[in-house]
Amino acid sequence: MGVYDNVIANGEAILTFIPQRAPMVMIENLHKAEDGQTISSLPIIEKNIFSKDGFLQEPGLIENIAQTAAVGVGFEYRNEDKDVPTGYIGAVQKLTIHKLPKLGKTIFTEVNVEHKVFNTTLINGKITCDDELIADCSMKIYLDE
Image 1 (cartoon, rainbow, N blue to C red):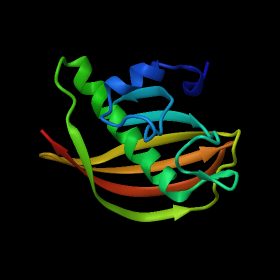
Image 2: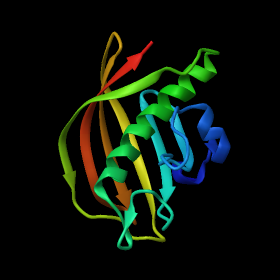
Image 3: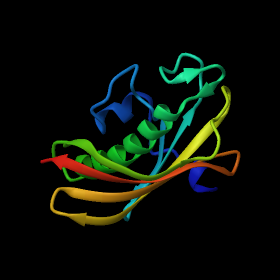
Image 4: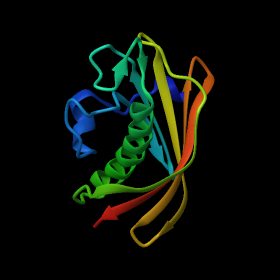
């Protein structure tokens, strides 16, 4: 059984780890959240706010990476019986969109924490679809703790 087969939270449970609410939720399943790595997935559907012309658009991909980082932090805080902090994207760097995912496909997003200093975290995120890299970037995220 691979990491993508393991689901540790989905649906309404995801909402306990992130501040976003419909229609802005860009994660359906949480597959892993440990040791500075978070993996999530999202099926691409037509009613997604960022779907247009049969594809999930660039802002949806960026938001998906940010929410994957957020769900990892939220999961960690909930497991420590702490309130989930609100995070803010401070910077997006080295963003490359290789391809937009089509409706009906599922994307998998992996976020790895590179550095953490006080309430600032630098992450690297990548999105794959059908085992192909479709987007990647670095983000600086600030937590309001």
